[in-house]
Image (cartoon, rainbow, N blue to C red):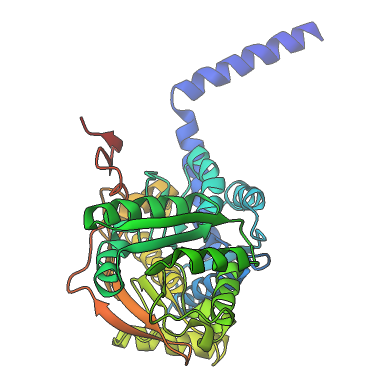
Length: 416
């Protein structure tokens, strides 16, 4: 037994020496062929179908699956079909992490499309960085992140606020009440808002955060009455958006005098709360369902045909849709034997397409996306009226609130 054990140890050591000489590259290469084995390319679809953010994430799941179905119906990617593996992380960051690991390690997905909240993105990020896999994140978010394992297709603060905040100050006044859900995204967005307000001579009369899923806003409404802001700047998400709007209306507050200005209220939340509760309030985003373009007409028609005539599209579902096509474009540039997450990341740099909102492009420097800012007002019919539309697309600057830092292809750079 002792000889066998010594032999085993010697063989193990020898195996380690071969590994150092590069043999694992051969094994990994062969393993990577599984990413496109049998004419199939497996991807993960990781959006909450239950829980507090399912109100929005369920539509992200639908938009992603629609794009996959369209691509497959048109012949797939160089003859290979995209196979979506759908998981429900139930609006829970810990479950997001668990499901992400299953998709990456267990299911060998070459990419995963997922997340709405930054809390869930932060929860899965270690999985993708440790496994060197690729996560496609479609949501507007706070920036201040620089990862080589995430493709960011939603807006960052400069793409939503640079025009929005000055417009609100000019139209309504300089007193802002900041209300958000209690996690990193609202706090960072409000940090950027305060920097813009400071330049404009504005004033924050209050800043408050409520738990995810919060539904009782009577104390917030009372504080709004007492502080009398010109603008209620909202970064509340999920079911809480519906509750806040309904209670605002029930309290008899007037959006003509004191509107809510949101970065997170889309057609989807408006459909849930009812058009009357949303009417008169404002949202800044790169996309609205009413945007006029042939690409958007096609998207809206296809979405309604697939998921129901009563369904709506919005600025995160649109990003889910076009990022799936950008994935296709990147994979088309690669040989089957080269289909790995890092190679897809490198192939998507600089990729562009005409999305429903207009031309979008992945910025090679930071893996974020050039987008088209818009400001719109909600109407009682459940749709928005676009009031301001950027004349040019806007470069993503994920560290706009931190001028001493910059996200580059080499990683985060601290400027002296």
